[in-house]
Image 1 (tube, helix red, strand yellow):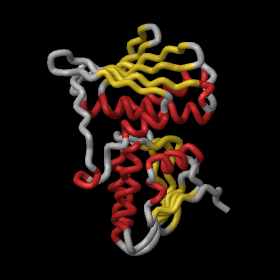
Image 2: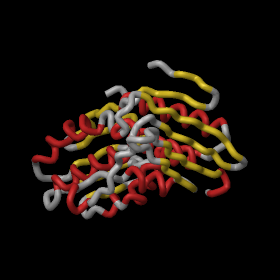
Image 3: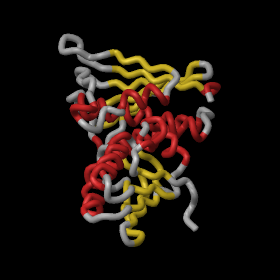
Length: 134
Length: 105
């Protein structure tokens, strides 16, 4: 797998087989930056879900994960070059699925989604997780 | 499936070793689906399950639905991180899914 190092950003192929490597990257960064074991598990799951959405829905071939720390909080930006196409699912109609965004919300202190559109492609999901929040 | 190994651990019992995400959740479902064709509980030993994404939770829900009225899906030695996700998503409230945290005897 080709991994492009660009400061705090890492780029991964937009393919489900890259998810294991994304999670290892987050585990490494979060433990280096002093997050507790349970916070690391939560961060890993939140970022994995965000990358899964990008991989399944954005229609682009790379997803970029940028990890920065601001004060007590990690800010993780998951970006693709595509259009935001996650739908609002109705479990009554479509059965199981659509847990990703609610999970990311529950596991993070703050979440922001900047949607890529056909005129302005490029979706970024920002997940903020703070060390003191436990 | 690089990330995940599914080991037979007894009659209607499987040990999950590794990580479940969207890259292998369908394979996992196919492996376990057969066991839900006949009546009775199925047990998944989760002691060495290090990660489960929402795609993996969907597998648990589908297995439990397959077995509804005929048996339970029992998660054994469920690690704390997984118990938390099952609680957050409400999957642990499925009538025929039982989450056990205790280590095997």
